Structure formats: C-alpha cells, structure tokens
Length: 511
Image (cartoon, rainbow, N blue to C red; front, side, top):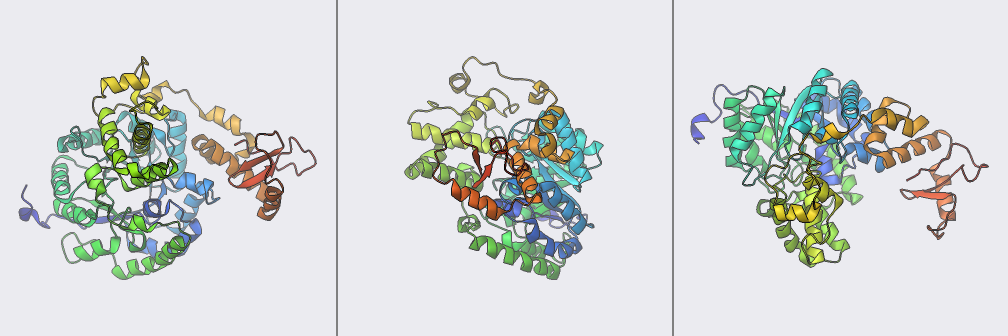
C-alpha cells in the first residue's frame, strides 16, 4: 500500500458529511435523551449547512421517545421533516430486527419501511449484527420499493474470520443485492487509520456505488481514521457537531471540515454556520450534563476497546452488571471472558443485540464461577440460529452445553414467522389510532401501550398532578395483594374495570 502516490488526487471529489447530532451523537453520549424541543431551534441553520444527510431517527430513539421522553417517535420524524426540508433525513434500521431485539415478520417489516419513508425518511441504513445478508435482504427490497435510498451496512469487527477480504466480498454481495450506498459501520472504533486506508482504497476499486464510513472516537483514533479514509477516496463520513462529538460518539464535524479546507476533499461546509449550530447544542449538552444524563466517562479516550474489542456502550453495561452483583473486582476477568465467549460463539460482531448477549453471558460465567452453569435464553437463541448464521464455527462442546440436542436453524429465521400485523392491530385495539401506532406496539408492546394510555389520559384531563396524588395514596401497599391499582414507570393508575366510578378513560396499563 502506497499512500503518498494518491494524496488528494485530482480525481477526488469533495468529502460529503452526514451529521449524527440528532441521533447517534446523543445516543452514544446521553442515552438518547435529547428531546425534539431541543432540536427544533437549530433546524434552520442545520438545514442550510449543506450536509449530505442528517441522521435523526432509528436506533434507540424510537424506544426512548416513548419510554422516557413521553414523545411519539413518528410525530418527531414528521416535525423534523417539516423543519429540515432541504436536507436528506437518515435512519438506522436493524434489518429484520427493525428497531427491536427480535426478528419480526416480513409484513411488519414492509409496513415499517413504507411508513418510515412516508413520514420523512430519505436514507435507510440497514445492518445485521451478524452480517447475515439474509437478514437485510427484505428490508433492502422494501426500502427501494417505497422510494428510499438503500444503504446496507457492514458491521466492522476484527477476528480470524473478519479479514479485509471478508468485507470486500460482503460489499460486492450487497452491491449485487441493490445497494445504493454501502456503509462500513465501525461501531467500536476498531478500524484503525492504516487499515481504513487499505480497505477503502480496495473497495473504491471494486465497488461502483458510494462508500460511507461510520466510526466513533472511543479510542481516540477516529479523526485519523477519517483523514486516511478521505485520502483513499471514501465518499461520505459520519461526524457529530463538537458539543456532542468525540468520545463514544463520532469524531467532531468542525475539525474535519477545517482540516480538509483548501484540499481536493474540501467539504465546502461553512465553519461559521457550523459554529452557530454548535452554539445551540452546547447549551443542550450543558443541560444534559447538569441533569447527569451525560457521564464524563463517555467523553474520555478508552483504549481498552483496542485490547478487548468491546464497544464503549458495552463496557458501561458490563460495569453496571458487575456493580449490581457487587463484583466490580471481576472487571478484567469479565473482559477476558467476553473475548473467550465471543470466540466460542463464532466471532459475532459486538453490536446490538449480540454485544448484550455475549457480554451478559460472560458476566454470568465469571460470577457463577463455572462457565455456562447459567445460560441466558438469548445465548440459547443465538446458538440455535434464531438470529441468523454466525460468522465462524461455534465451539461444539459449548453449543452442546448451551442448547443440548436442539436443532440448529439453517434457513432465514424470518421464514419461520407467520404474518403478525393484523393480529397486533386487533390486540392493541382502539388505543392505536394509526398504522404507525400499531407498528410502535409491534416493536415495543408494553412501552407503546403505556404511552397510548398516557396520551389518552392527558387528552381527557388526567393531569400528572392528579396521577401523583393517586400514586402517593397507595405508597406502601403490598404489590402481591390483588388491588385495582397498577404501577407503570413511576406512576400509579386506577383501573375502571375494578372501580366503575372513576373516569372511564383511565385504563389499566397491563404492564
């Protein structure tokens, strides 16, 4: 590989930028807690900057909107579309998992893609945690059918299985399947600068569609990764405005724009406009820090990722699990065990949901003092093939211990699922007012039902103050004793099924 011969060659085009400030930046640093009201004041300036796209939806935003922010994710999307008419809006879709943690039937997936595009999404980035192309095929077809830009992503990782040639072959397959853009999704910041140059250079020689690179700055190498990728000819990169950039988020937008200014890869973005947008989000970040939503640790460089190949978010989860078990001293034991479990499970990339599955199993192995004495249902499902084809061979002894004599699924897992939408629509009934509502319920049944209940209560004058009085009145009651009171996310609701005298719009959340 010779870098010097191709430094900003004459055939290079301006580097295009996708800014993640409205999605991955705050998902990575602030547990996806940015509200729509925090986004809207900055939309006019964001819309004028000239980004290739703004990532604003999908990933964890959907669940968080309903669960923690009391927002309708579909309404957020429609609102942002109106506020950003000149910029492509982008989302992250987990293939057949959609935005949840299991495989959904094709009819639910089709409807979700259709409604996402109808409500304002232009670019759909589609990935599968195992890089099983069968799990992204239907989503790719649906996105293209309904007029979206189809961007399948390769979940980047390092293992004896995941060579450079592995990703070149995967990219060629995705191009054949109809990709409009192909993304290298480096969720753990494992793609180092020299490797990034080499991979991008080879892809640009073999792949006709644009190459989009996504990384984080967890290990402190993200800026160098993007510079080397730019030298190699990458078409688009993901960055995040500086108030929520770097650390576990994407490299900051402004430094990259400044670095490339005057070169053949000049982004043509206006630094003054970027500074104006950053000023707004600096205030938002300060608020999230004050609310202790942002932990200072997410802003720091953590080179453990380079050693153990564990993403920053996964590290935080492992620490939390160990604290709950009062086993913080076992931290490095768990990191080593995570690597071993991953090897035995066939080297799955560590991204949602496989990162949670592998990490939790490693914690249980260490705490139990005997490997696979306790096994999660998710570990069983993974080794049974319910999530798709694992990249490498599974350790046969471990597989036997985990799933026994269960048959391993070899077909596309979703082929075993019957259509679900009509049954889900009937199940949620009148609480769902649109097809979008039914889809919200399909992905997160308990969370969506509770959200719809609260929506109805607010419309009928049941204030938070009244609910707080009800909650205070039942404090101390025995939860095991049957009574007409149920708790949901810190609020207690009366059930009209048991007390007919109360307002009939107050219903049991059934959670």
